[in-house]
Image (cartoon, rainbow, N blue to C red):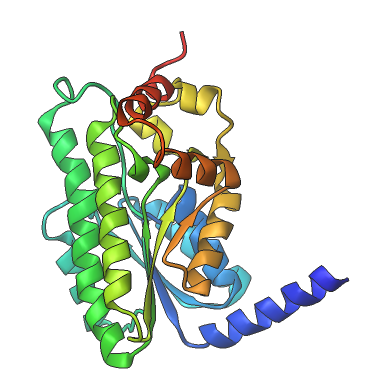
Length: 278
């Protein structure tokens, strides 16, 4: 009874906050972005959904409109392209959309030895995971500061806490996201704008298929979390205005433990979990 009452209060608070507010979610067509879209829609936020797949976005948008009676704008766009972030910002500006919450969720990884991965794969990860995230944060932050209101979530990973042999560039990009987000969160104290770095661990999404890590120990033997549970934790951290949130107590324990272990040991363990199961 008590939990039901508290949940009802939470929903009332979120719906009151969401009145006429808009959340922009990148990478919204699948995985965590898809789950975030459902969570914001549940609490009556209007949405701007961005991803490469136009048909998937359109299907999701129609579902959310019918279920929740919200406004949903879809923008099919590859944020890995150099000028895509500016294009996205300009399109929302022309449409008169005030983005109250920005969720920088789009990102990807590629597995394999750095020397053997095609250059375009390494560059693509840097462009999407770092450049697009940084530029979108910059562009949407200024209007938030002018209104003295807004929230930004940058989705990093527990990969941010250690080097990652066989996924060297991906791990490094997520370390950037963590450092960048914590730094600007401090700069924005008392500004009315909060910035959250959300760090999921291994999660069952389409990420591992694109990264070709389905057969790694990380996904085969170490019990990945489901995307809905992870998204709920990230959503709560964002709405609570936390600077850093790690999904799941086991992931939190691992992230904390690497601070005290020898770096060579941490790196060796990272490689071991990334290796395919034989």
